[in-house]
Image (cartoon, rainbow, N blue to C red):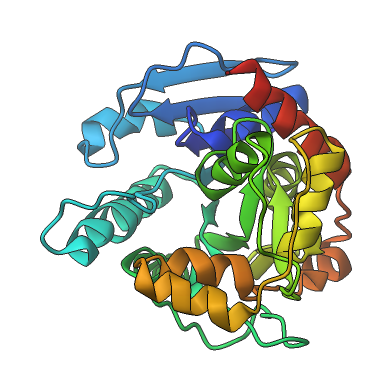
Length: 321
């Protein structure tokens, strides 16, 4: 049995991670800035430390770190839809770099042997060329402040690991789907539910995604697998075009797949006209990863079928209407 500290335990990924760790019989220390009322406990005990901000001092974190073997760091400042900060990069660095490195140093001083960072595919970049997926040893090319902050956090942790012997594992997920997913996936399902025709028939892209349940299953494996230390993994369990995703969501009950063809160049022009270039780019461009390292080095295979996770995501959204 391991004793694992999970940060961001009330979040979309963190809550499922706590559930899986406890179900596997591990003792979990769950930390979050938010209250944690619905965390599921299984065979292993779950101890909650609510109201614990990453900016809190060492005296606040030491009880949560006591006796811990592994930290899985899922807390982060993520993409902000209505950014108010004068300099977003400064804010992302404060939470995703400075606070992460403080926690890692304190963890090492407290006897933690391994630190698993939930990073982001945005470290690699925003798009790939057809037939050329990202691989783990590609040169990072982050574009936005969030991706840049995650890359800086990885570099700082690598330096700390080299200096102290702390075992570091970096996992860069692609778009995470599953029950409770928000953002672009929730918006897409809403549009489908309304029966809005989607101009995706000419889009032949490939977008890699990973189910929340499969991502957490892999994070549990990374917490203890001896071959994971010192490695960076790109994580995905499916690779679909946007139009194929719509069809699969439709088959799962999200709504009709009303797809019509519109030249991509026209969609791009419309995106510029209405200042929605980023949205159009996500619909039309490719972002594909090669996750073979996880399979070949650690022997990992997805435990959950993508179709089942899509169906669960659709049911969860309908239950919230």
